[in-house]
Image 1 (cartoon, rainbow, N blue to C red):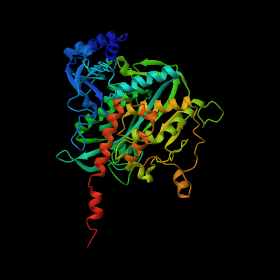
Image 2 (tube, rainbow, N blue to C red):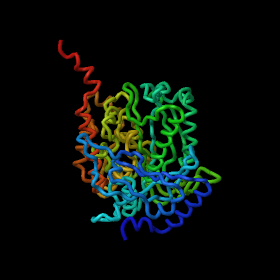
Image 3 (tube, rainbow, N blue to C red):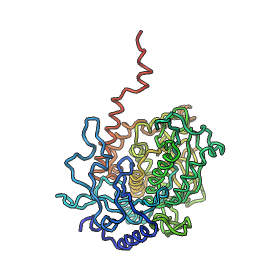
Image 4 (cartoon, rainbow, N blue to C red):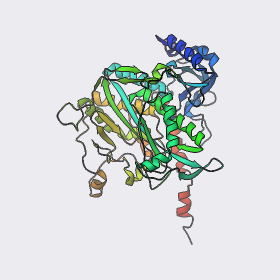
Length: 489
């Protein structure tokens, strides 16, 4: 059997497919978005009438391989990743991700796993390695089988609500003032974030807290942490929700890392821990009638958090946590290419006056380090920003953890000083890569992190991001004009 056959015929999937049909009938669904994730984290796919659910669940749909790279061309006019001669992938829906869209209740969405075409001469029906979501599922399953540990992740997605002009273009203004934690500014966006929360709860996000951050129109809304794959799906869903709410309120939901200078950028701090045991709790939101598959409304609870301190020092994680941090520290340069994956990402790292996480060190609740223990049992990777692909990030962190645990890597002592002041006073501290080009070089040298993007995934990622970097280097910007237009009398 091919990988595709194994996936379609996995035990219990037939019951899930039937359960989705029952939900389709119960909820009055007439149309379904069959979606997967591109290399940059975009949501792509097809729409199929709900009447064809059973056939699509078994046979899937076909779409060009290049859709995994947004079907974009590089600066030379060549398609990124795959040319027009490539065959078409097969997208197979994962019924456990089925959910109704709360803004149009006749429409639903389901995430898909991508496979090579059934008629390929080489590895027909094999896992499509440029499917970042499918790769994360495989990587986590392998990690759990090897170490007996589950990766649980919680993300803190900052983003900005920007004003539009009458033509729908950005005015260059955020909706609110850049006052961090001010309830008055939070209140000014209440109609927006309350609609985001309403839609999020309806699609399985257990929202726990939120606040106004310190850039114009900048909000952070958080949901409960969970299994790494489910959390990545929820972050993608959250981005979809924000885009819809922006349409409803004539705003722009901006996930660009740093649209404004002189104020904070938008990060997406990624908190993680490794666990054993625990059980899934279904419908934590208490819906009387769940508008989707059970798994969408499921969170894992309980078990043993192996990042918790195992000595009297509550600021030091246990040995599993220390070795995992050691793995991340070792591969931090390469990881930066994934967590800070755009040219604009490095505007955030250069603007150090706003707690930019540029130093390759770790500490306990020390926000001047790139990595920190944010609370006992929880490790926060701070240089991840709002534009990152959480599926690539999850796979890369598993690879770094695996190396740290296998080789018992010691991260060294935690840093307790203010790193900005220490550097100003003359301390020599290792920094993260400070441009996309430098980060891509570090990634290209790191076989461990490259291995988290197997086969075609790394080829597509490298092609896409190298082209992005080269486009930037070849572009004349407003900065060039402002600086050099009047260079001679």
